Length: 251
Ligand SMILES: C[S@@+](CC[C@H](N)C(=O)[O-])C[C@H]1O[C@@H](n2cnc3c(N)ncnc32)[C@H](O)[C@@H]1O
Image (cartoon, rainbow, N blue to C red; front, top):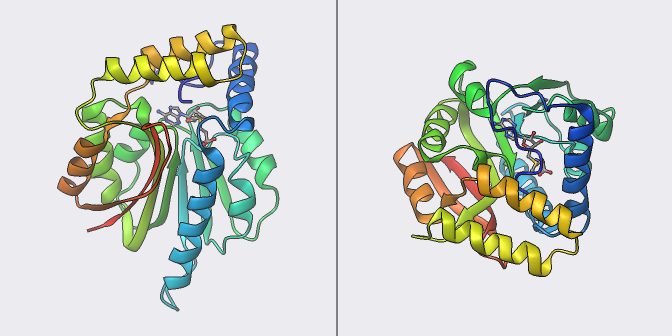
């Protein structure tokens, strides 16, 4: 989810308190642990896509530079990252408190890592456009941007990508033509009927997603990506017409 860890104000990214962060993160960990949003399938598909990309990488291309936007605590991705022959890894997240968790989860690896507390859209717009990123990754974070912000994000990130690079984007998406209200209502129904969490946690998640989640319309985001120089391929789509993983490559 989408929203247990979302901060509505990009200018004030710190959680109100460590206690609030702990509570919200515990909720997120509970739903990841119960695999309610397809994290296991997404992690498997991500690992397979990365392995295939690295296999096909031309000899002499150099070790790939990876950036992970909204990295969270790396609870599921760390074992995948530890196997990768990266040149560098940057974990970026709006929530400062997750970065030490991510660093500890990854442990010692044979490539340099850095950890940045930042808003992913600000990073996309403001960090250097150097065409140096080989692997861009983001899982369940970009849906916090609204429609125009997602287009801005796609335009600016495209300019940062190296030749032969890839962008793995896992997130929630709306069905083509579906209104945000319809999406929110059916997701709330799914949480109330199917998620084995206590009602207080269910309502906390529903309240956050109602306020802060802006999943892209599947068809519209493909068109927006293509208009901004990306080729789009769906790698995995979950059974709930919401969670999915896309592979974007420079067109
Ligand atoms: C639902 S968690 C996903 C964490 C991890 N990627 C995963 O799949 O388990 C969303 C993460 O994105 C971060 N996040 C939310 N909005 C963000 C933003 N605008 N910029 C950077 N990170 C953001 C949150 O702090 C949180 O760590």
